Image 1: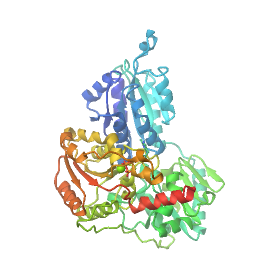
Image 2: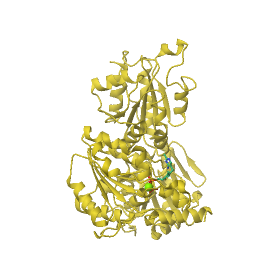
Image 3: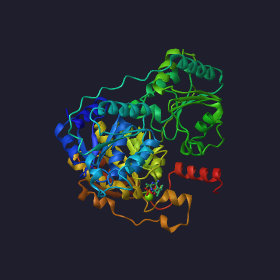
Image 4: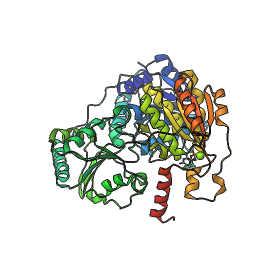
Amino acid sequence: MKLTESLLHALKDHGARQIFGIPGDFALPYFKIIEESQILPLYTLSHEPGVGFAADAAARANCGLGVAAVTYGAGALNMVNAVTAAYAEKSPLVVISGGPGKGEAGSGLLLHHQAKTLDSQFEIYKEITCDQVRLDDAVRAPADIARVLAACLRQSRPVYIELPRDMVAVPCEAVTALPPAVVDKDAMDACVDEILARLAVAQAPVLMACVEVRRFNLEQKVGELARRLGIPVVTSFMGRGLFAGDDAAEDVPLAGTYMGVAGLPEVTKLVEDSDGLFLIGTILSDTNFAVSEKKIDLRKTIHAFDGWVTLGYHVYPDIPLPALLDRLLERATSTGKSALAARRDYPHGMLADDRQVEPDDIALLVNDLFAEHGPMLIASDIGDCLFTAMEIDAALVAPGYYATMGFGVPAGLGLQAATGQRPLIMVGDGAFQMTGWELGNCRRYGWDPIVLLFNNSAWEMLRTFQPGSAFNDLDEWGFAKMAEGLGGDGMRVRTRAELKAALDKAVATRGRFQLIEIMIPRGVLSSTLARYVAGVKRLTGMA
Ligand code: TPW
Ligand code: MG
């Protein structure tokens, strides 16, 4: 078979279900093979950041590979920020870039799209991917592809594959997937013994679940561990949405989301007073921990992340999280205790009256909607929409750590392509100005997300940190009116009654994207963002 076909079959065998991309002349030859071979469906979008975000979200939704296919230089380098987000937030994204053919380097001319050298792009991608390969040798290619895809899945981080344009159709063997990594059983047992012993002596143990629990699809296992040991579970900020939506298990003792001073006081107290905090797959980031009321002493926690388990001064390397959970469940016997934490009730019951919509109202209304119609997957951007989403009871993909704008809309498209389910997208006007136009691709693929656009004519979250800077004022764009040209329906609302009517109409209308532009006065924040910013300012001495 052709080298590109070998790659495509390998992607499929490793769990990829579709490709997002934008071609260019260095990519045309392999895009042709993607299209003609029909091994994986191809969705083209409009701008490479959107391609990266959509593929990242597809990976997050399916707990498997996402694939972003681009051209050399202008394409791949345009996607650097999105791939960095996937790296930081541990999403298994495969970047495929076309590249110059082997003979082209020696022509004596600079090639278009070239940066400093023809290798510059490869070097740049080394910083934001966990493994890389240039497929310039058809004999080595199957083994190289197997290695790179295994790294992508095991480390749950992006990888980079460069496909020289004269290599795409050379004959190539099929790829044989690598066998599962071998785990040192004795090390694993020592680690599991120590974790269980620590949890057993703790007066107030707590499990905190974060991204890796989702990436490795371990929600049920963490839930089972919590039940068996009688230990309450919280999610981190970045882990918000775990144990929700379709994965909701009513009997998981889930207390809520830890957000320090910005969160529920009882959840904050539970975490900060714990003498046995087990951080499962948790990123030790400022968004997860900087807003702690009482600083958490990480030396006293149990931390499993990136294949390492750290307990105080003991460190166990090469302990993959999925194998750790399996072994913990084999060894943990029921303690007979039941965790006290009652599952959190999220606020609902929005009054559909003539009052001006505030961000908190949106959370109430969406919770009402999900209670009536069942949950939808949510893709959120960064901005007040994400803090509002913290009060919604649903599975969520969002850049909660890396915090890049522009994620929400393309991520929502990725969710629909990957799951076939209609998603809800939450996005601010600033972020929508960046990537909202990707909605124009919905019509030809039959995607019909519902988009809640928080239009406060501002970079409001920035203003909250630094009031008084006029540059945070944006013009008021008429987004709802633009929807028709993009192939969807737009509605602009100001009052709670109008919002309710628009959402009901959006839910009832299938087959076209539904954009609800919610006008929010400048300076009106969700209560979670207000608490978060006040907390950050107080704790960092900004106020
Ligand atoms: C790619 C910095 C973080 S939040 C924000 C900016 C500019 C304002 C967001 O405005 P929006 O939402 O979307 O209208 P809201 O609720 O605050 O009004 N460039 C990128 N990413 C980030 N995070 C920034 C700049 C930023
Ligand atoms: Mg805004």
